[in-house]
Amino acid sequence: MTEMADQKVEDNAVSGEPQNKRIADFDPPEKPNTNKFAIACATLACMTSILLGYDIGVMSGANIFIKDDLKISDVQVEILAGTLNLYSLIGSGLAGVTSDWIGRRYTIVLSGTIFFVGAIIMGVAPGYGLLMFGRFVAGIGVGYGLMIAPVYTVEISPTLSRGFLTSFPEVFVNLGILLGYVSNYAFSKLPVHMGWRFMLGLGAIPSVVLVVGILAMPESPRWLVMKGRLGDAKRVLNKTSASKEEAQSRLDDIKEAAGIPMHLNDDVVEVPKQSHGESVWKQLILHPTPAVRHILIAALGIHFFEQASGIDSVVLYSPRIFEKAGIKSYDHKLLATVAVGVVKTLFILVATFLLDRIGRRPLLLISMGGMVFSLGFLGASLTVIDQSHGTVPWAVGLCITMVLFNVAFFSIGLGPVTWVYTSEIFPLKLRAQGCSLGVAVNRVTSGIISMTFISLYKAITIGGAFFLYAGVGVVGWIFFYTMLPETQGRTLEDMEILFGKYHKWKEANAVLKEGKQGDRGDGDEIKSQVN
Image (cartoon, one colour):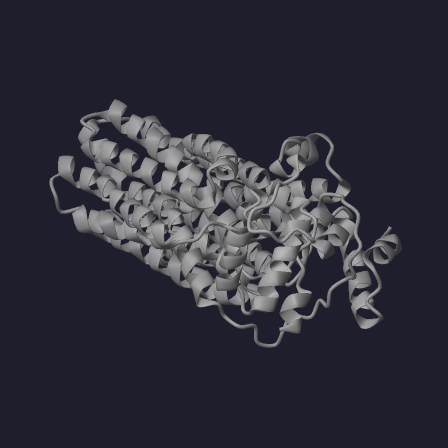
């Protein structure tokens, strides 16, 4: 277990506190042990993401029936589909405070409970007004879940498994989308006024399962340490680590980050006031260290480009895209949409096994490059179809293929990496608030994209809309290539050196490799070489 013990998590290093430790061995172990209990905890926590995924998937088909039943305009459909993302800002904003107050676990319970209420309201809504109120309530629940699931998962996960486990939220988003698509098809045969209500109301079931399942989960060990509950934290770490030695090593790291002296080993100890996050926003926004500033830019940037490249337009409005491609039958449109969900889910499962093998950065660059390619050809095929008077079979086939390619490339990299990357780069004291800022950018961008797609394609044609998304993707690829260092297997002590150099991070990476090949000199010595 010496390799495990070498993977030290130095949260205080990134926040600018002095370093006394030596640089760790950066080579990952050959065969890290799998902790089944940690996987079970991560799985239950990440089920909160099903709620968002189900809503996205089910609304793509339900809005067709809602429009027919309630006689609403395209603008009202856009607002209905996209505002949940904006409402979720309230939940994600509150989640940072709530999770530090009542704990990560009970914040997940709160997320499921709020979404349950929202789903019931949407299912019984007699008109557009109450339907919008139900989405407001559900959106708050989604916001809580989006923020807390990756935070809890990264805090419960052993370092060497964190990429695999922290990708679970995106896995469950995709599973939720697929369930939403299947729900669309299953209830499409019901009378119009009943079908969409069953589709939306069914979202209450996953939230009930989530709330019940959460009772079997332990609290985050990092939150327990922040509250001075060292005995409880050690018991959780013993269950979620590969050995007692690794558990002790992780506990020492967390104690150091929380400002608790190493000689204090009682079950309950007094925590220094500063570790409760009183100056978090100053450290994060007003007076960040160079490393924290770079981390914040990287986190907000990756969340922005994840949504600005148009994935929600492809997923949420896929029935309309297929209709524009010439598929008129409700059944055929919904079946094609189910195929989108199946492909998206399959490729996210592949990504979970690649994250800790080939790294975050290669997957991210391949993913965005593939999305630019597919968006460009999707725009071209839709332009050909739009300007043709008759059916163009090859263009229709190309359109459907490019939609599938787009969601596949998204799921293989950009989708899971966004959440893994942002949840692992922030130091402990800044993690909850830093992740909530990332979620806020994600949801605002998603809301804008969702609420403008129909108006956008009416203004610049549907092909032009996807050409625009492809252009945004090119800018995103350049941002990722120049600004985002690889974090696979890195401790936060490494990240202090990697981050803060911006586009020069490769020089820091080279120095880290030299340090590993040499005598593993101390962190201050290596930092001086980089500077």
